[in-house]
Structure formats: structure tokens, C-alpha cells
Image 1: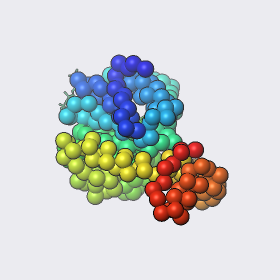
Image 2: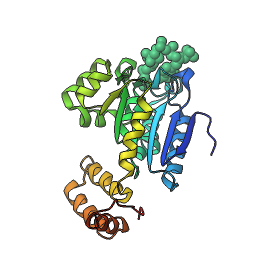
Image 3: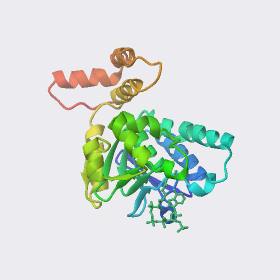
Image 4: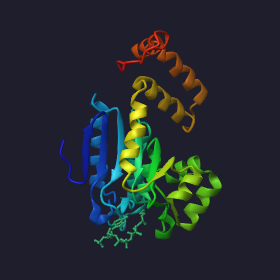
Length: 260
Ligand code: COA
């Protein structure tokens, strides 16, 4: 598929999706959100994709937020729809993606940009990255899951402060907060992220999909995470990957997972 605002390429099991509007600091307009949805859907369906890395093009920004020029004149109803549609098409879609999604945060990750990074399963930042949810400085609040995912990741008090001040934190503070797992130089970001993806790809993709479901259940209203874990754990026993994984261990060899 060809895209106007993003790049998507797959190599050695890793699909790298790059938001590519550097002149607008990769701000998420409607078209970009739809294209990201389509690229993720393509990656979901492709047997070539084992892990997705999402990043921004250029040296300055991951994503500097939702495209402010698109919603400046919206009504109450349009504002609500914007958030609902964005969450459904992209942010919840990424959070519940069955293959691992890693955000490689290569610069500003603000507003919808940080929300996208937070929807990913985990984050790695370059040391020039700056993160924040500045929406209240515009008279609005985060609408792509930020008020929910930021407190889940950094704790309620820190999230309250970040959202209320509309301020930015740097990569090291984000590391201290647990918002990102690792910090690298800008030059090493993609290679380092690729190495972590490589470690993931040695394991059973079927078991990883079950683990994502069980971990996410902890954060879903009305879901009992322990029950989801029991169900997913049981399901694993019916998979080819489980047979291969346990057999390989007993035969003292490396597992070659069929991915079923
Ligand atoms: N929506 C739309 N356009 C955006 C944007 C956004 N969220 N963020 C940046 N841009 C555009 C700018 O309008 C500018 O476009 P122009 O050259 O056509 O005027 C271009 O990207 C470069 O941004 P600029 O502001 O000139 O860069 P800077 O280095 O001076 O500042 C930021 C960088 C990130 C501090 C600043 O762009 C910013 O505050 N962006 C908005 C962040 C935000 O509030 N996001 C939450 C949205 S809900």
C-alpha cells in the first residue's frame, strides 16, 4: 500500500512505521491517523511482521501532537467525535495490537504524540526527546487516552502535575518516571530498538499475543485480569508453539516456533 504521510517498511521481521510530515513536526492530522491505522492493519495481517517499531521522521520530532489546525473551529459534538474516532482507529488499536509495538521516541512527543507512544507496548527514547501533554495550555484536555494511560505509566500524582502544568519532561526524567524503558543517543535509537525487537522475536509470537491480552486486561474496566490470564494460560497448552517450546527445552535445543 502507498501512503502520503507515513512510511512503512519490513525487514527481518520488523515493520518500521515512520510518521513522515517533518515540516509539521509529524503532527497527526486525520489522514495520517487513517494511514497509520491502515499500516497497522497491514502489519497485523502480514506473516512477515513479528514486531512493529513506530517512530517519527527527521531529527526533531516523534510527533508534536494532533494537528491543531484541523480542530481549532470544532464544536462540542465534533470534538467528542474526534477523540472517539482517533481512539478507535489508532490508539486503542495499537494498545491492543497482537504483535509487540515499540515506540522509538526520537524527539518531541507531545499531546497526541505522547499518547501514541503510550499506546505502544513500551517506549525507548533518544536523549534529545521531550515529552508532555500540553493540551490544557490550548484550553482542551488530552483526548487520545492520555488522561488514562499517563497515570497508569507514571502514577497519578506525576500525571496530574504533567497534565496541569502542560510542561515537558526530558528523556532522563521520563526514564526515572518509568515512562520510557531505555534512553540512547539519537544515532543509536533505531538499532538499539531493533536489538530489543530481536530478543522478542526469539520467543513464541502466539504466547506473546496471549501475554499482551492478559497484561492489557489489568487496565480494562470490567475485565478481571487474573481470569483473563488463566484463560490465556490454558489456551497456550493447545498451541503448536507450546509443544515446540517445551519439546525443545527437554531435548536441550533452541526452539523453532511455528507461530501457531
Ligand atoms: N499541529 C499543527 N502544526 C504543528 C503542530 C501541531 N501540533 N506542532 C508543530 N506544528 C507545525 C508548526 O505550526 C510549524 O508549521 P509552519 O512552519 O507551517 O508554521 C512547524 O510544525 C514547525 O513548528 P514550530 O512551532 O515552528 O517549531 P518550534 O521548534 O519553534 O517549536 C514545538 C516546537 C513542538 C515546541 C511547537 O511546535 C509546539 O508547541 N507545537 C504544538 C505542541 C502541542 O501543543 N501539541 C498538542 C496538540 S493537542
